[in-house]
Image 1 (tube, rainbow, N blue to C red):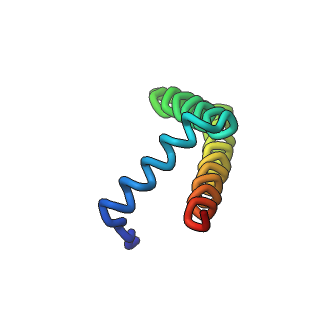
Image 2 (cartoon, one colour; image 1 turned 120 degrees about the vertical axis):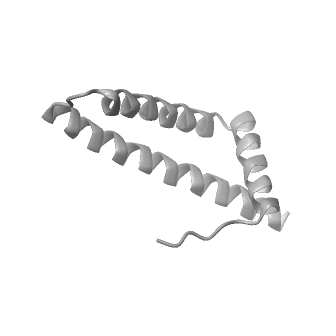
Image 3 (cartoon, rainbow, N blue to C red; image 1 turned 30 degrees about the horizontal axis):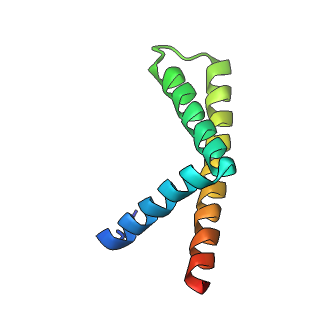
Length: 87
């Protein structure tokens, strides 16, 4: 799988937008907090030497939720960037 790399300036700008949204948007902060919570829960499941079938079901569910949040957060970044480009 080829992955396009972003120029350093674009990465820096993206990180700045994320930092701004973390400070200014309660909705973005809440999503970031949930995303981190799901990551921690996934780490705990993956650290088990013998995950149960229920663990695997939960892992699948958490991965879906985490991805949905990531998509929503990326959409917020995209909207913010579009608004600031127009302004």
